[in-house]
Image 1 (cartoon, rainbow, N blue to C red):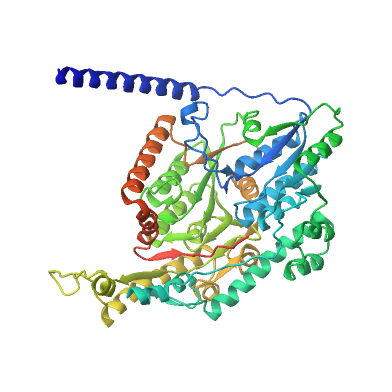
Image 2 (cartoon, rainbow, N blue to C red; image 1 turned 90 degrees about the vertical axis):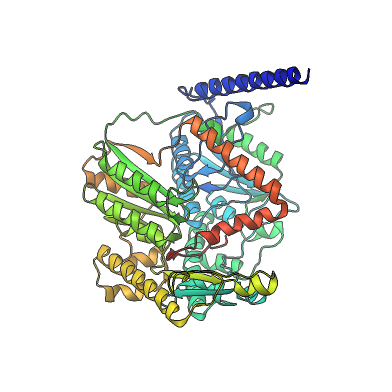
Length: 584
């Protein structure tokens, strides 16, 4: 009897599983079909509610029309897609204006600058841009300030307008208490990446450079805000440096905000601007909905490949949120060998990572440049390994506030013998074939010879980096050296010192690529890496969710610490990496 019950339960389970799989496959097939464009009503307002991180590229959810899978992929808003929507809205007769709503904006400074420029061009069409938020962080206000009118909640609101900062976290004291010895090997005085491990504060050289960097970038931001708000640079600098704006009324007093109003009051003001009847409400069209109202109708056979490289640079295939050398080398080669692709643009938003991975991609970019024009477009960051990729291109575009340079390398190894033995009571022993077989072991101190051995490899890696950088920039290594040793630069500074060729955004880079390829405006853009098909996306998402679910359940409170070790794992081998992150 028990056997029959078990058999029946198994058959029932298989039936349910089969039914669900058939349902999912039908749903996936339907979602993969030709997308129907949404019609936008006349007199609509595009509502740009930016409540997700702004990324280089939007990860589209192929299952958004399938209720049980709709939330599987919802990582952020793509900068490219945002600009496309705003640009299309400028010539869309059904769109009368934009309502911008972004209290907390998670985006890099150059990214915000590109969004701002797109909204400024939209205003040039004669349409309005209104910004309303319950509060504004520094970055959110930088974007909002481009609007014709800026509104904010009248009570319990906050506007952050007190400048930029770079805050370092230093682990030397913790390592001393844990009896962990970090050993770093670098070349030059400015490779700031090693300082969190071997210092308790910033070195004077790094602090001075950061101060200059922040001053230049903050100056650019204030200049843009001054142009939009009809204020002087000096007025804004004084407001920021003196922290004059604290209360909501002070934001109005000093000209940062036009009026304090609740959301319903802003809707009434919007109705007046649209000249609507009292009983009518503004027709707000969400960003996600508006994105489905148009598509690229280009029919050209010519292509420009835009290869989006965003995240840490790692060896192998990598994942969706980093730059795997094997995966990207393959994509670069594919674009280079495609006869329809007339030029390539490498879009870089990375502080670097593995020197080996950077060099592998550098080689593929150099080979591609022998066949067709290859242009680099720098986003928020293109430093160290990110610059390594760019220097293989024919022409390098940066933006004024891009963080770039950091031409330098370092190596790191940890000695955890004291931690294991004195803190945990763990001891180790080994057998080896040669005296140096355990050279990279983490359970014993390095001898002076072993330290010299690792430093020699680091020195050689630095020489390789600087030699290739000098070659790419048509400089001598002697001329490059004052710009290297890990020093970081803004895009404006890099233009002056010869590390980049031009200032401009991705659109400018694509336009130059088309010109160099001799195809004028006759081209379509194809973005790489090519997204996976829906079934692959589903399997990857389910596998990722399952791994996270099992590990987090089994490890409980220890799971976040295990995940943080993945970053340390990436520090294996020689690194071309910068840690600079500017708080805005």
